[in-house]
Length: 252
Image (tube, rainbow, N blue to C red):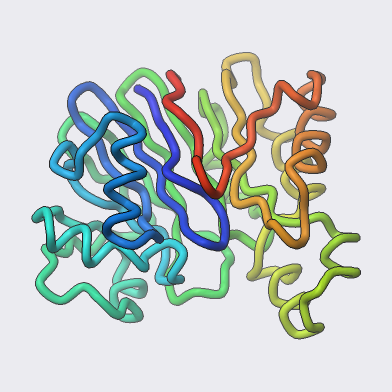
């Protein structure tokens, strides 16, 4: 199993997960032409995808899903709550999922789990091929015992490091937006992500990728430092998903 990122951040998100000949796209927050170009960087075409799996209805995650799915006849998996809030899924083959029930797309096992975020029915996912497991956690205001249980034992982890508490407090956002981002239904702060990683780290955890890093309220260096201290490695050994280029294929 391997995975790669089209881009990560408030301007758009997309992650490709591949197991054997099966590939799914997790979220698509980019325009149609941009999505095609980002897939091409990974030597992929939209026709190579088995479908799109969606976390929640915010535009940086679902904004490009409808157009890409309609253009290329791709099925879309999402929760009932996300479907109720979605704006552009007419003509799309939608599969409604239970936020607690695993499902499969060909040879790829997908386990959703609910997260605290300010959306209707948001989920994140663990992907598996029967041997290795990839955990993804972004867009969560805090960790929970259930999140920790779902991510326990994963071989690779894409982990939100959205903001630095001091930068958020002293940054350009108005007070209401600062409360939203830093609240229990907002986004994970570097220290929260590090504390969660400390609970999840184990000898089989091969890769940790910092993701959804804010351009205004964080820096890649601060995110790297927070996670590196937990992993007992050099800061530069922690990889960060970029908004513009994402990251290339990583083998789990």
